[in-house]
Image 1 (tube, rainbow, N blue to C red):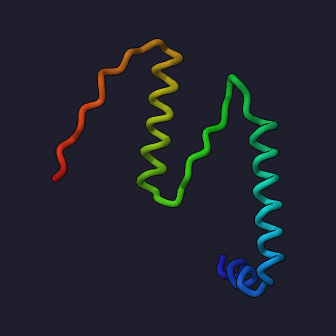
Image 2 (image 1 turned 45 degrees about the vertical axis):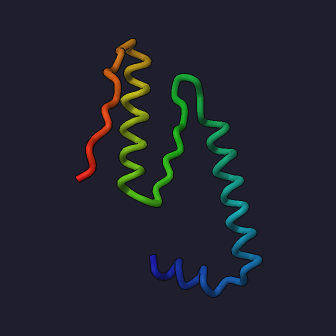
Image 3 (image 1 turned 45 degrees about the horizontal axis):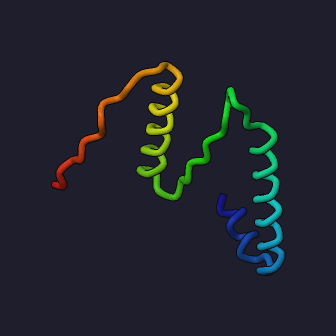
Length: 81
């Protein structure tokens, strides 16, 4: 892993940006070609693990409740500690 980071730091900025743009384009292309109505992709930003896990669980609960026609109770605000 550190080897990759070292190579990235040594790469000229323009080349790094070009490669990053190409990777983003390939990712977008892959998502568009593989996401279907039956099995759609949900992109979860993973900068913060806590946020990513909450988003994943909310997406899962929302999808299952919609598909199984389950009405969930209204969300209650939790008091701050």
